[in-house]
Image (tube, rainbow, N blue to C red; front, side, top):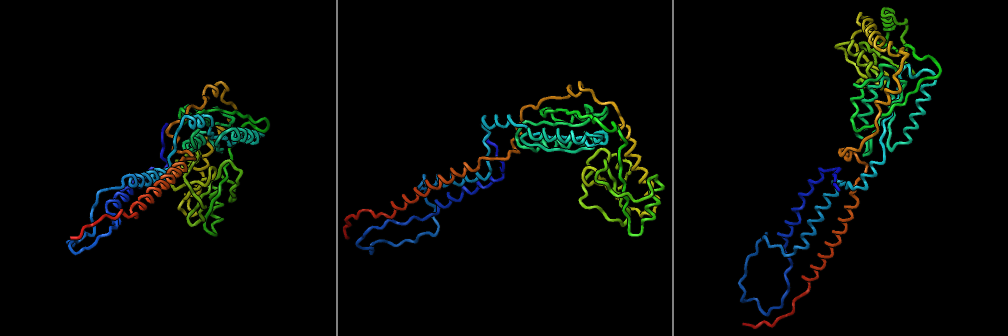
Length: 382
């Protein structure tokens, strides 16, 4: 059996053990009262204000030290990793479910079937998270990141996609730790086109009165002559913020491969993302500059050229290949116990309460012994 401390910094409270030791060394006990006939012949002496004394109440001191030490241990939130608890962790599965929401997988009845499969996988898991991904590589990265912080359990990554040829390879699977299980659920749309051109929604934001310049820039780049609103149902969208234009809130780092392709096509231009499907490009140039149509053209080229052929690919990975790549989840890693959602601190606090009771009993017994006067002895007067 091992012991894991969820809050090890709390052990710094062990320094408080010095407090009861100092108190016992400096404490002045009440003197026992003895009847005495006369004090004339006793030479007066000056008692020191602070005097170190030998420790006479060792049991009481040891109990007080134990109270401080056990309380510090309880604050550290110990977790006792017993064989029974480890067996319970082995019997449950934390599952990350990556759902392909690319254009080819979204054709026909693919989304509905993928969602039903994801719900079924989530219900059978101890803990689960569904990750919608435009490409499987970014979905794998996000799923592995979540599994790394999940509570102790066997870990499994489930990929739900139509698995077009080229959408997944062994290099992407190498990002998955060997102890994680991998399963593939292939869903091929039964109706609708098997592959359609990827959808890109483009929006340009400029200062008030820049509508004409924005329209001209879109026409020059081959885009339809209108400011395209961002469609939440689109596969991807790009918001170009020209100089002085309103900036979307909650901008974070880019999270998809197609965003990385667009960022690489615009070196020196600040960019970010809002969610998994919307990329924000901060052009820092006015809408009437020639940089805007060039940026629109480069964005469209970077998005469509690497993705269009992949999304139109009619061939898919063979079931034998997916079976070869599959593996069951392995045993839990010792390091995952650090993410446990429980601890045994409450039981240690019960021990602290028991020690406090023992300390109270010892203290009262000592006080009663000190308060009881000794039998008077016959004192011979000089």
